[in-house]
Image: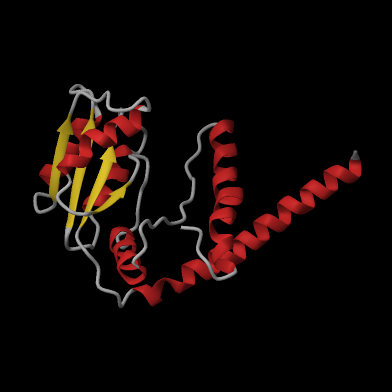
Length: 197
């Protein structure tokens, strides 16, 4: 049993080291995409309550450096406390194109998918970025994804993310999984020359 445990620890460690190498390769290749022309983007942000850090998370999308950007917020509850935060940000950033959609939902069994389906018809652009409300993004996030899409003609683009700010054992364990196992699995295909998505 002791040998099996050592083998499992060794495999997990190798996975994370290989993932770290792949992460370094992926993030250092960012400048190669900067020359490609990008397209207008509609960002769909499904809302469901006012999570901790929601103001800063949403604000990071109002501060994006991508010129042709539209933010579409959606909820199925007209009393959702997140709506007050969106309204505050809209006043603070009046030049950012933004819509708030309150709809009935019910288009899918999964509540988030139902919310997204209610928002999608309101998106003005063909290129759509779906981003959960708990995502806090750097200023280049939307523009970089749009440039990668334009350069590769990919049907779908994703990027690596990191879990942070845990306040419980469960949150800490989830961040270990996201920042270790999941990040490595997302980045490893790039190491051998073919991105997973």
